[in-house]
Length: 129
Ligand SMILES: [Cu+2]
Image (cartoon, rainbow, N blue to C red; front, side):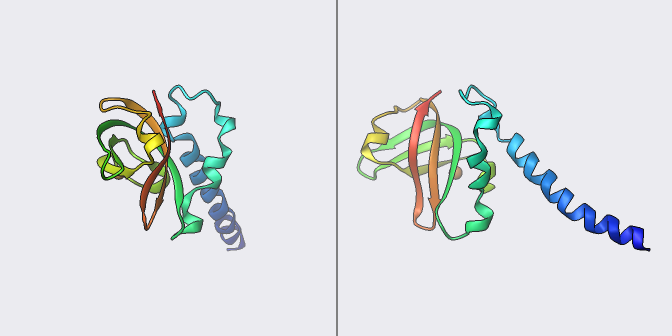
């Protein structure tokens, strides 16, 4: 059945492309008030984590600040799902530099970018919604 073989070869790359597109368009934080259009965020797709396992991976999420620990140097966030890392919604502490911690207060709803690696999760930037 040469026609069946041809269809199978054709279907694999097509389904992969469709999956990538679905991931790009379902990122919830890109639809809510971000000043850039959908065409302005191709880097998010290129930084998807599957290729560089083991290295630090950058992702963004939305959440609410539930605690700031100056001694530990962390911000605890009740954050939404992080599709780029396949994370569910949860409450967890992120490492954060003093200048990042000083930008938020407990109760703030924020969007934030962070690096996830074996060494931990560190907030790179944060902004209030
Ligand atoms: Cu988490």
